[in-house]
Image (cartoon, rainbow, N blue to C red):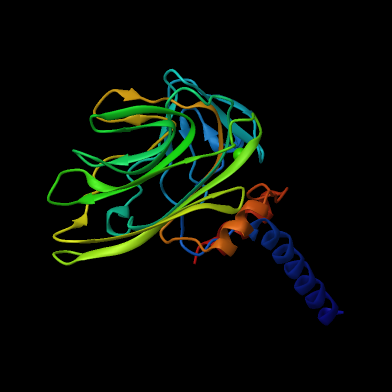
Length: 285
Ligand SMILES: [Ca+2]
């Protein structure tokens, strides 16, 4: 009888582990932060980082609406944005990183920002739609996605940017991943590539080599989702919905991007508090 009870206990534990590995089908190796924007993870004006320690601060009044997975935030194009904090010590490794989000929009004519990082002087990396605005260079390009990566060089705000026409303005959900993979050696130069994936497919690969005295730009300012806040006043506000935002400290591979694109289970589907506790313990490495 005693052995029987032990066996049942064992079986129950296995069951719990099985239940809780299912929602972990997203890639977690290198995952730094994950904002679901589900209503259970939004408390007042705080968007909880369910994986890391970078809770986002919601500005303006984005609505909580049905999303790609659970709920999403709907940005009004006027004042809504999320300050995703400075992402901890990301300054050390943002030359090799990945940004991921689901977006839904029909605006293909107004310049708007999906994600933007910057230091005191220059934008560092980001994604903007329907135009580019890097320092004093501003132009509208309807129906495009612009992705960029900057580093310090002899000229301020040096770097690389690419613009591509994209069919993502149809009011449906689309999955965007931006991988950055640069090796930069101060005084020598470096090389790397940037890749944009749309709905799991690499839309454009930008290889880039450079010489001279370059370095990664210091990463001193908060990361902004849904607007650019540089300098001071926010502009380039996003019009549409953003959901399931993740940030990795390494470039995801094409297979991993596809895996995340296909993983549409809500984070932590465990229905009981006890299962949530097990899950929380499991993810603490
Ligand atoms: Ca969500």
